[in-house]
Length: 196
Image (cartoon, rainbow, N blue to C red; front, side, top):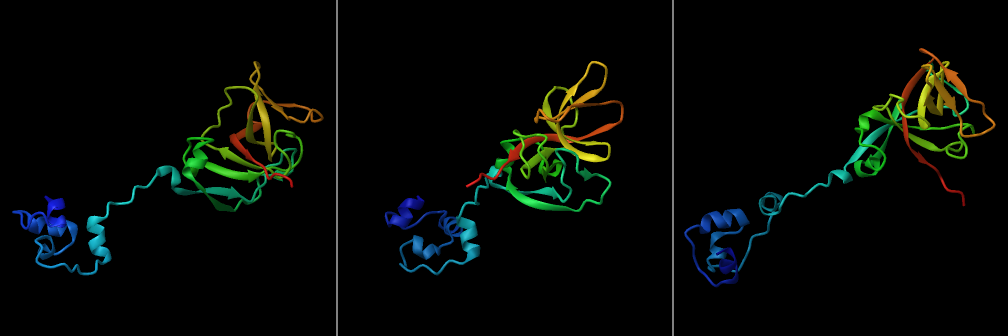
């Protein structure tokens, strides 16, 4: 019926006033009594334009960036005050690495070469703080060990200790026992600037 009214194939309807209100046009226009339409304002468009569909993956979210730099060899002390700032990412981009909420993520810059070639000096890492139980060996974690922030591979040992390993073969592994080590979160992504 609306199509017929607009094309001029029909001149009336029992519901012409409801149709004109829904389309934000005068009933006289739909009935063919006038060819002129008044200019539409934003309120009129809000009634006839469908609401924009927001893709959740396109939503921009904030992730904390810590001024603290986790050392990949042993350079940063966790007892220093940390001032968080935020960086913006799309939710979809972050979901490529983790399904954790953005409030449980932070980014940090690695320093040193003990995790080379996997993580190079000044690479950015994304750390998921919702994952802090070392259940599987040889994954990369952000940890506090001896009041120092580190990014290392961890391997649970049968005796209850945790082996703290570097990817650089020149750096010896250590073993932490009891409360010597605190897991901050799992490293879920490494972002590197390409040379050239």
